[in-house]
Image (cartoon, one colour):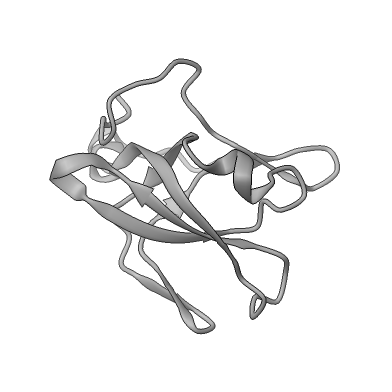
Length: 112
């Protein structure tokens, strides 16, 4: 494991957002959803692609709060431009389990 400084950690903008739209992503190499996430007034809306179809149905993702890195540069994923990185954990089967707050919090709050 590589150690980082506190200053390195402070550079990462991990914010909570609410998923407001989920679309299919048939062009993806691995099954994935295209999501629109609301990070509140300061950051606004961002889009992301996530390979979470094993555990999450599109309808059940709407309204879910997620933790995402919002200060990476946009990344082209096929025909889709991803504007943030939704975080999660790979379980024993390799499926991604989303990193989420265990209680509702205000959109846009930064992980501290």
